[in-house]
Structure formats: C-alpha cells, structure tokens
Amino acid sequence: MSALFPALVAGSDRPALRFGAADPLSYAELAGAAGALAVRIRDTGRVAVWATSTAETAVAVLAALLAGVPAVPLNPRTGQRELAHILGDSTPGAVLAGRADELPEALAAVPRIDVEVRAAAAADVRGAGSADVRGAGSGDARATGPAVEEPDDAESPALIVYTSGTTGPPKGVVLSRRAIAASLDALEDAWAWTAEDVLVHALPLFHVHGLILGVLGPLRRGGEVRHLGAFSVEGVARELGEGGGTMLFGVPTMYHRLAEALPHHPALVRALAGARLLVSGSAALPVHDHALITAATGRTVIERYGMTETLMNTSVLVGSGARPGSVGLPLRGVELRLVEEDGSVLDAYDGETVGEIQVKGPNLFTAYLNRPDATAAAFADGGWFRTGDMAVREADGSVRIVGRKATDLIKSGGYKIGAGEIENALLDHPEVSEAAVTGEPDRDLGERIVAWVVPVDPASPPAADALAAHVAAQLAPHKRPREVRYLTALPRNDMGKILKKALPEALRG
Image 1: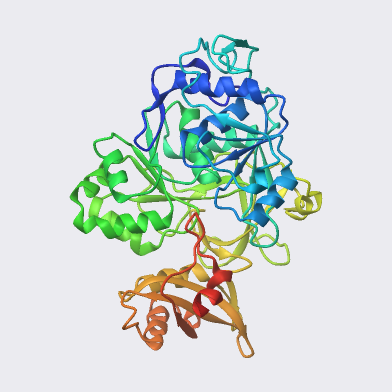
Image 2: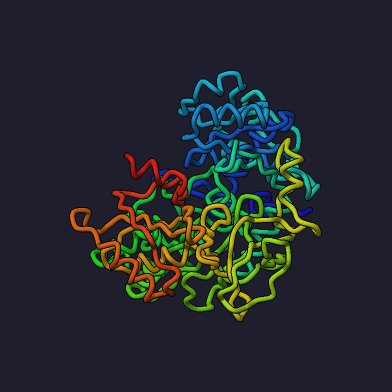
C-alpha cells in the first residue's frame, strides 16, 4: 500500500505538531526523530508506548508505524493489575517513553527506550519513509542507519489498542494499516479535511479518538496538530482564535465546559464561531449543549460514531446543518444495518424502531489478540461485526444511537426504550446539571426506568414527580423514570463516558 504519511516521507519546514507551549516540530524534524527511532526498534517485535499527552508519544507511535512494528499504547493511569494483564497479553519487546517519565513497577522487566524528540532534527535525513536515517542506532549523530521503509502489507498490524475491559479483562484490538488508512480517508471526504487544516484538541493519546483521529489524521492529510497538553477553555479560545486553528475535536465533557463558559467569554465565542469544523465523539453530546453552542456562535457541532474495533463508522457530513442527536450517515466503504435480537435484519427508517448496529467494511479490526474465541463471537454470518450499540434510523438513513445493548436498552412494559433519549430529556430540565438512566428489574414492568440526577442546586433538587412528568411530556408516558436518585457527580472514565456500573457505588459514596 502507499505510505500512510506522504508528507512525513517528503519532509518540509511546514509545522506538523505542537504540544502545549513547546516549539512546534516541522515535518522534517518529525521525520528525523521518528525515522531515527524506527531504525532502533525495527527488530523489536511489539513495542509498548507510555502514552502521555506529549510529543514523545507521537514520535514513538510514528516510529513504530515507520518500522512496521505494532505499537501498544498504554494509559498512564491504568491500575497495576490491568497493566500487568496488558503486558502479559501483548508481550512487548520494549517500552518507549519520554526521558522524564517515571514508569511503574509492572514495566521494570521490559527494556526501556527513551524517545528523543529533537535529537535527530539536525541529522541528515532525506525522508524517513524511504531514505537513510542518520542519528540512529547507538546514538551517534554521525552514524548512518539502514533505510527505513513503511511496510507494503496493508494487513500488517499497526496498533494494538486495549478495550476498557467493562465486560472482563481488556482485549487487545489489532488494527491494521488498512483499517487506519480507510477510516482516515473516509473522514477526509465527510469533513472536507485538507492539508490546510489546523486541528486543536486535548484528547488522551492512548485511545482511538485522540491518537488515530487526533494525531495520525492530520499527519496523513499533511496538516497540523495543536495539542493543548491539558484541556482548558482558555487554550481552546487561544488556539482557535489568534492561533489560527480550523478544527476542534472534543468529548461531551469538554463541549459542556465550553458551552458553560460562552456567556462570559467573548474571545471563546469568536474562536468557535471562526472554526471551520467542531467535532464531538466518544459519547453522545447532550442536545442542550448543542443548542447553547449554536445559539452563541452560529456553529453546529458535528457528531460521529466509532469504536476501537471499527474506527469510524458514521458521521454527520460537513455543511449538512444542525443534526443534534444524530451521528449521521455511514462513511465511504462502511456497510451498516440494524438487527433484531433473533438476528433478523430491520428495514425500518422510522426513527423509532430500535435494533443493534452491525457493520462491515475496510475500517474493521483484524482480531482480538490471542482471543480467537472472542474474535469469532464478535462477528455474525457474512462478516458483520456486532457492535453492541442500539440505534434507530431516520427516513434519510441517518443513525441515532440510543445506547449500549448491555447497559442502555431498557425493556419496560413491552417497550424497547433507549436510555439516551431519556437522558437528553432530563438534561432539558432547568434544574438538572447531569443525568444518567438505567434499567432495573421490576416484577410488574420487567424493567423500571431509573434516573440518576446531579441537580443544579444540590440543596434544592427537583422533585422526582416533576422530572417524571417532564420526561413524559417530552417523549411518552412509558418512557418516564419510575425512580430518581440524586448524586453530586456522575462517575466517568478518561474519555468522559458515564460509568453506569459504578452508579450504585457513587450513590453509596
């Protein structure tokens, strides 16, 4: 296949990426650093990457991709037991980390290679993709390493990204070069993504959203990445404003904070209004945050839908107007269908009939590492991947996700109800700050709807009856909560997703 990063191979003085307040790396400098490291690791087997939000992580992953060595991004906040499982499962030959990084005891037995971001910048590098690389090997800046060439095999493993482990130990999702290229190129179409775009974000780099979309995506296009290092309203305003950023990627928690800041932050209003594209992902963006941002800036936030195993499946298309609650249409090359519990395919485009999303296409993962049983179970006949996400389809074919099959599909009184739409209705109530909805066993209804609510004013929460009536008026009587539980905050993971299985513990806490 052709190079994943043509601009990196060519090299130039154009800015490629910048983290925080550090000086940017040009494509030539990035090629030098990644190419030098690629020579050192090309016979390593697999490499783990201590995935901090730094340029060292970007250089490490790019080096692995250039060398044809599968990279395993490690979340620095992973607990010891889970980290030990990931290391035992993936058996990396080395761990790549920044020189200043302190690694946990679980990594003590894995050979460490420190990542140098600037060391090879002045070396004689004639394109890290195909030319000799100086400054590699023993660290002698005058040494010339053998040529580093990207693998030609599109099916060769590029990344092994571990799932969150919500239904058991984390599984290693093997992502090929083919899957990465197909997904990023489909987004080029959907978002009119070009080399002129400057992407701003603050997403973690151990996950598909921040690493593949947020770093590899701009570099594949030949554009620029501005990573804030850590999310802040001021950082977004600065980089999208005077910094010249054109695109913003975020998760709902980030957009919620931006929406709350807009009434008091004229510079943020101007910055968001001037952006070409605002994209939210990893969880549903509440409708009221959509409305607040659009009202203040005139800009709409685009949502897309993907997961570790599939990369990107659907997106609202740039220029298609406001579509709150929708994740848009299937991307180029992606086939999507909704399926009943008995496996029958739904042919309903009514915005009401709920089914499980199944997809197939070049964006799909290759396998779960060392888990042929789990890989086989994940696919239906014909190569359709079972996502576990429940959705409805509108008349135009666009998809609206109502929740996860395991946690968000509630069967109550003979109805199939998605938790997501009830959560959006609750968030429309002026006295509700955050909301989650689950189903619990009920002798009469099968399952009853339970709302978990963070009030705007904890000292004076809205009455449960008032919230139930509000939902019934917005949606339908059978979708009203039968019970309301009040919390001071909802438990969330690093990507801002609500951890519904942790809600009872949060209530006790």
